[in-house]
Amino acid sequence: MVNPQMVMYEEEFNLIQTVVDRLVRDANAKVVFIVDKNGQLISASGDIDNVDTTSLASLTAGNIAATGGMAKLLKEQEFATQFHEGEKANIHIQLVGNRVILVVIFDSKSSLGLVRLRVKKASEELNHVFESLLKKVAEPGADSPFSEISDEDIDNLFND
Amino acid sequence: MSFINYMAREINCKLVYYGPGLCGKTTNLQYIYERTNPDHKGKMISLATETERTLFFDFLPLSLGEIRGFKTRFHLYTVPGQVFYDASRKLILKGVDGVIFVADSQIERMEANEESLENLRTNLAEQGYSLEKLPFVIQYNKRDLPNVASSDELRQMLNKGNVPDFDAVARTGVGVFDTLKAVAKLVLTELRKGSGG
Image 1 (cartoon, rainbow over the protein chains, first blue to last red):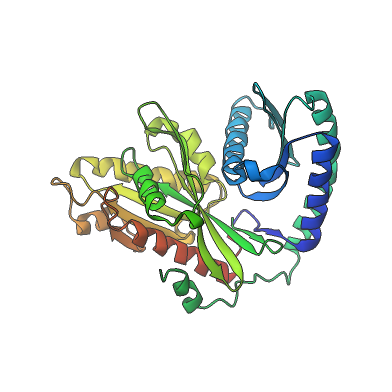
Image 2 (image 1 turned 135 degrees about the horizontal axis):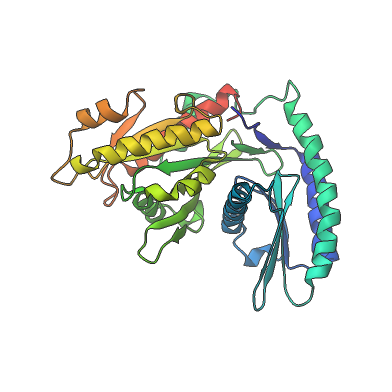
């Protein structure tokens, strides 16, 4: 298949989580999360108990996909940044390395300028982590933990 | 493209319901949503027009339980069926792990079924996928209506690859979970092969 499988290991996860945790503080954000382009949530930080991150992840990916489609029609590579301003909450969406999406939700305690500045730095760091992660996944010997699952394991999932 | 998260011990897969306009893709998701234990599902999101036609997609996250210590989670998506939303359909197919084709069994929708199936092939091919290599099942929906083609006729027309297929009445739930289980099984079996989605 064209797409390599997305795999997340503990080491890279911790690196990503550190960047995301720090971005929440540095940008005075409410919530920061990272989604892959297919809508799978990779990491989240901040006041996540009060937001539906799974739904937001899927909608963000849909949004980026639609914007990417528009870019293509206009012969642009991509529109890497989006900003939506609400009355209380604002959302800043940044495509990182054309691979994952960095989302920052913030209110009046922060500002667009600050968020943009911090997102820029965090994006660079994240890009490095995802590059090394992709290399690791591509290495031979990175076996799927599912190579040994049996028909019975699969059937058991559906015994309800 | 499934997503294996060793840290969270989770495996995430993406399933897409495809088919012609008004064939019952959203109805499938609605039924699954209604009949699933709240602990095992997230919110269902429908991006629809004011007349409740799917505009972009419906989305429903489901967890199926654990396999070898990994939580299995499936993200169910529908595409907008209407012909002119083709650009959106292409986007939703990105990263797909399994496809359910929902056919409308009514005789007058035969052409629409064939057209939509062909459109699925084309859109998958554009992204380097082939329907033959992807976990794929077919559902013949609306079996309760009076003017339907027989399952055999539908099979001959739409299921040349002889993939698992199911009669269904999505409105009342007949065949809905059978279809979902069949494609989920195929996706998990594919994972076992380690081909990486």
